Image (cartoon, rainbow, N blue to C red; front, side, top):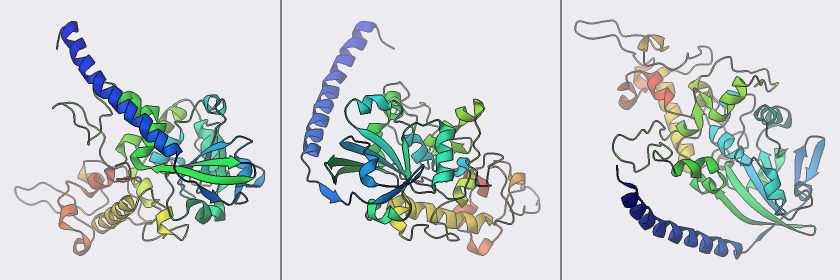
Length: 350
């Protein structure tokens, strides 16, 4: 606590640093505008509502294009789709401001048109939607979905001018910048905050999920919208394990695009997700024939076999396959507790 005069003095001191930060951002943006450009084939086909269209048409007559490369897990319900992509994809709400600057915003989705566009409609997004299909390799170019790519049209030619991923995408997300101005910040585990400040959001996509599904979906459901994607796989309840089993690089599914680097937002995230999924499967036997209930700290809800009670010891969950379960996983109060903390985006947000 402080009186207003003292508070204003400290605010003015911080303002000096903030202005320096702003000017440095201006200098970086100036350097970004001077980067060389890479020419891209303007005839690369994408899928629109009424059929294939060339990349050139995606610009809709404007010159700059911002393409959000969104991950998709085929056949999975809306609740199991990427929470990070849902978060950042939805930040482009007021398109008229971009259009007034001759900029087009569009989503390049990894999945098929019918079910992915149904998710877009469920969310109420109005920007253009283009599944990339077999053109993923040409557009992603050895990188991965979970990024923004910035392009320029010059007549009938197309050039890639910049791209961002990871925390660099925060610039396009007011839902990141605005909480930074509040006293608690984003309430994420990595933040340097005073002792006792709330930090409910962990490193595994927690900041983008709420009760087992992408957070932005909750208010849509509350408003009565249907999250049925028409793929015959609609989640009847939220489950953190649904997101785990839909990992594009899970051992049972392999990489849907044939190139591992295009499936996940970062190599580090990919390694973390798959190693943790392996640990969980060893500790808790994620079997398709035996669905896992919602996560709970109560070991009686865990599908693992309980250890018979002994004198002076409480019942606890025992790994279904002890030989395959690492000690670190076995030490968890319940394997379901570990499952709750592993989500689809893993550490890509670092």
